[in-house]
Amino acid sequence: DDSSVTDLAYLIPRSDITVLGGTAQVGSFDIQPSAEDEEDIIRKCQRLWPELDRSLIVGTRVGLRPSRSTVRLELDDKVYGDTRVVHCVGHGGAGVTLARGSALEVADIV
Image (spheres, rainbow, N blue to C red):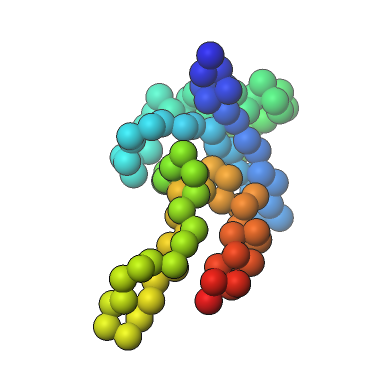
């Protein structure tokens, strides 16, 4: 059952606006807004917030959140000139949630 993906919706209140969102599309790297996705997001958010006033929507943006089955957080074995690379990628939509823990692990590696 993939209803958790198709029903994904979020509302993030900020001081001047509320960010609406909610898609998870494996293999989609399109950075152009889709009218179909926009309508789907608004519909899902209105179920959570029935008072949502569509006339107050100020814009549409696309944000890519690449994910992996597990986060890659490791020191690269290769040396690039005199530089080492710590990879910290693949958090998907959980980036904000995992940011502090991942940053602490990166700091430990560095």
